[in-house]
Length: 219
Image 1 (cartoon, helix red, strand yellow):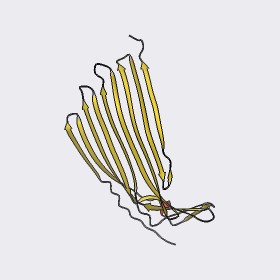
Image 2 (cartoon, helix red, strand yellow):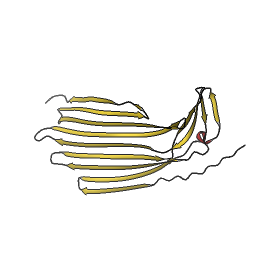
Image 3 (tube, one colour):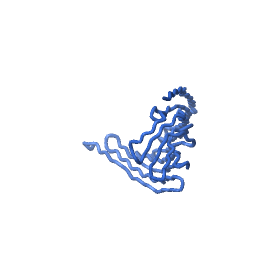
């Protein structure tokens, strides 16, 4: 019999920076760190042969992963003209990310084992700008939204990099007459990418949404 013992140190560092540039203009930066430990099933050096075409193995050398997340927020608002700017950026990277190391043998059977990889990350961002048309009840908004990620795994000793991205632009407007009518319309268009080593899947997308609310009785 073999006895295995594991000791993990969990650290959750945090840091925040907040800056009020002007009464209606703010900037904040934050950092969060967190760990994720391997499960008992991932660590124990035992084989699961219940499926003749798929075998799962444990990895007693598996390390815990550590996530670093950095975020930035910015906002600016002007009462005159009802003008607003808002944006954020988030980025996460993982050290010793727990992924899989798969081997496909000649018979077609897949042998899968948890494995630590590097290079995993994800990001998301948003920027919005809005204002009210002069001498009217119309508001216009413009926005941009970008996000993406990379997640790595190993198949037959070859690193598989799965990358994805989403890049969108949009414009919208709304009309609000107090206790009479509310109307909103938005149009978004974007480009989506997905790549796994030499396989690419890229496409355009668009969406139109809107709603209208009428308050009765009309006066």
